[in-house]
Length: 137
Image 1 (cartoon, rainbow, N blue to C red):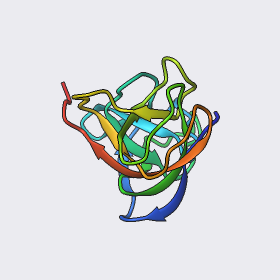
Image 2: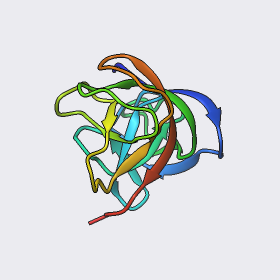
Image 3: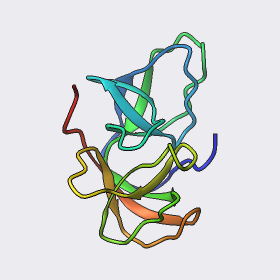
Image 4: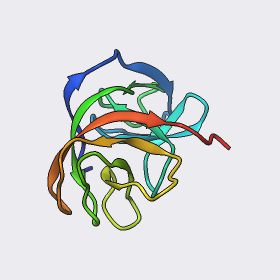
């Protein structure tokens, strides 16, 4: 996997979430909420953000939980449209690689957090992880 997020400052302890045994998840991967308290790799635009993977989860190792950061300051990679400081950010997997983030559209529900610095496509930037899980339907 590429473009994983790097923790700069941890603002809260990681929480455990359920995940599939067969899934491998890299440390720093952006995770989506699939059902309440179940995390998977983010793979689309505006995924419901569960947080960021705190420690690597090896595929098919019998473990069905993963530690997830839900608050903190992180360094990430901007998607195709880039990011602007102060703007809410969302996942951008359909036009960029998994783990890239872009400015949220107006009225976006599934926010990953808020950009602290501005960055063009492919550049690194800092952001506050503040997932807003509005819609679990």
